Amino acid sequence: MTRIDTNPGGARSAVTVRGLVKHYGETKALDGVDLDVREGTVMGVLGPNGAGKTTLVRILCTLLAADAGQATVAGYDVVRQPRQLRRVIGLTGQYASVDEKLPGWENLYMIGRLLDLSRKESRARADELLERFSLTEAARRPAATYSGGMRRRLDLAASMIGRPTVLFLDEPTTGLDPRTRNEVWDEVKTMVGDGVTVVLTTQYMEEAEQLASELTVVDRGRVIAGGEIEELKAKVGGRTLRIRPADPLQLRPLAGWIDELGITGLATTVADTERGSLLVPVLSDEQLTAVVGAVTARGVTLSSLTTELPSLDEVFLSLTGHRASAPQDTVPADDREEVAV
Amino acid sequence: MSAATISAADTRIPLRSHLRHTGALIRRNLLWIRQDPESMFDAILFPVIFTLLFVYVFGGSIGQSLGGGQEAYVQYVVPGLLAMMGMNMAQGVGTGFNTDFNSGVMDRFRSLPIGRGSVLFAKIVVELMRMLVACVILMVVAVLVGFDITHWPGLFAAVGLATVFGSALMWVFLTLGVVMKSAQSVQAMGFLVLMPLQFGSSIFAPTASMPGWLQNFTEYNPLSSLADAARGLMVGGPVAHGLWVTLAWSVGLTAVMAPVAIHKFRTKN
Image 1 (cartoon, each protein chain N blue to C red):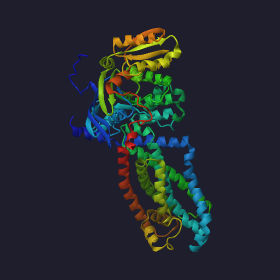
Image 2: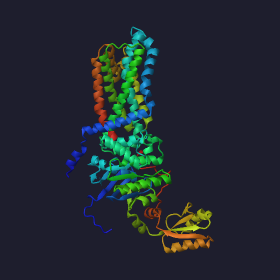
Image 3: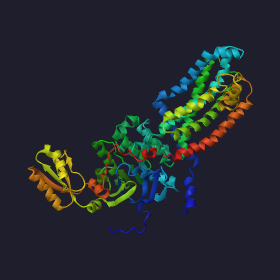
Image 4: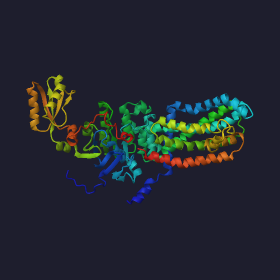
């Protein structure tokens, strides 16, 4: 924590962003974003749909030109040194960026050749990465026949062909079921173990908690908070109270009832039906006591009671005043769609 | 690290790398055909259907005005159909590329350190291969319905010229493919532009009986020039005028549209 960076923007910083602005007509997708990602760390960029996450990643990958501001990745300027920059990055987009008509092996071989590997190297790398991402058996099948999780794994493998030093993962698990999501997380953790710097955008609190060491919270094109995840949580204050009523049928009615009492934190009370417990955001010991008191006064028997760190949902609410996961139907599915508006 | 030296080193991609990248992307497009052989249907069926249709439906009556019969029309229309081949392929490349562009893989290509032209060059090379297949099939069908190949070098020259003009048209349609929102609109646009060019030409019938204003139009219609030149090369007759007009159009279209296509490809969000 006390480490002084004597060379800011130099070798230690894998990604440096200063005052990045991008407009789509009237919409400000990015409104002066600053970001520093240290080498070898995983930076989570957390925000709801339309916050500007994808726009940021696309600018850093040289797919999109910013209107103002500067950005360097691995020391290369996104505007002046795009080719050198492209050589050291890997990108896994929101939508699988593989050629669905080509077999998995051919996808990886092609990318090897496009990265100037020799035929022999490209073949070896394709074999090696298919093996590593457990796709060897599907190597000769068109990617279109793959399941969602397999496609994401192929996508990750494709991003790793050039041994990138900075990897951009733009919502790598959006649209995946929870089990497949865990698979992808495991793969990402392995990649991080290899010393790659990762910039991960996500709307999932759990994903950021699982993968990222530091977090930048973005909302409507602005950075509204940043720091280590634990730090951010401390800044918000409060805890999550987890209580388990003896009768699981009471979960949902109880959650609504507790919220109506108005003695809890900003986030809503969540019923975790899987574990049969309620997650109640509380900001102080007084609130905690009041909740437990109210529940027992209602005649509910509790079989267990614990406190946890506040959820990132709570973090987001206290920082922005609105929920992190905006309703899917009222917000564009991704930043790109704003262009069409 | 001065900015100037960085930029100079940054923009240069060695020719060998360009060839390697284009080669890898050609392989991709060829694998598509292997994966989906039906995509060759247009290249195979178009020459068959058009040749049979025009020779047997219009051949008799137009042939009469040519001072012969159906046989005379075969000699007339086959070079015209050859001229049309590039146009057909070009239209397909626009719609295909639009679909391709809207898939995620383009983001990956654009985030790789490759020349922006290579994706487009590869597409054009593969389409020209398909066009050559279509030309071979056209000539086989043509011979079966009675076309007389009198002059082989002329035939090859005509195919070469059609290929040159075809590649020029492909740049136009690649641009449309990148710029327009959907494959359907590319197709509709192509139809609107090409329909008058195709029929307001000497491809299917001599222009002498057309009204004056239309004759003026055909005079500068590159498809007319190409058809005339191909006719001259394949069955005899004047070549020079058609050849020069076609080459001028080809060079002009390529010089303007290739940079535009590459630029649009590079800067599209």
